[in-house]
Length: 221
Image (tube, rainbow, N blue to C red; front, side):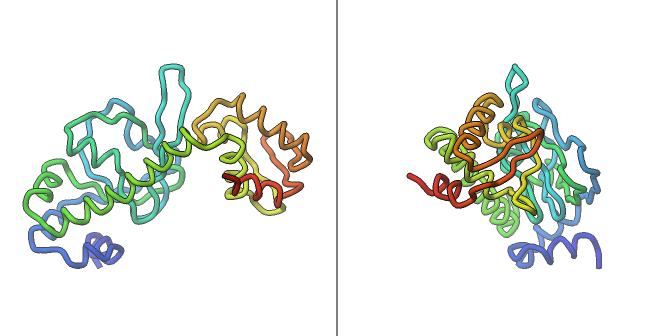
């Protein structure tokens, strides 16, 4: 089975492509990337449409002071909403993409992406369906940051990411990057949780003592 055939098999919409779409897709380049590799830098020109078929790419924004915010992740069978936006608007990347794991992806060159929009109904539908789905998730993140209390967002993050033995192995800075706030805010709120005897804190580790209390906070309006 060719690389392109294996790509098409993973996406229902690609299995219904017209001839123009199949020709365009045949020009995609398969890439294998190690964990920790930058896929695109903030300020880079956008030259390819990206389809991730295995692994995870983390997309993050960074301000002038170096503070980071994880915007979203491109995971198995995913595309990049910022890449699509930059290709459509002929803009440079406003954020950075870094592989969190080993990644297999297909890259469609800019000229072929433009052909897809103009000439292939099937490929155009695939691009915009993926774009709409991921844009909605990005808007959801903005709403969470703007309107939800940090204690609720932190409690939900802890519950969603706790590992075996009710232990979360991560730093306060990493949690802050994920939640779009400052490390000091996270440290202060974790100390509040510790004073309530809901968690116990040590270096780069959060031990759950009362998971039900955290769930209650996460559910509160």
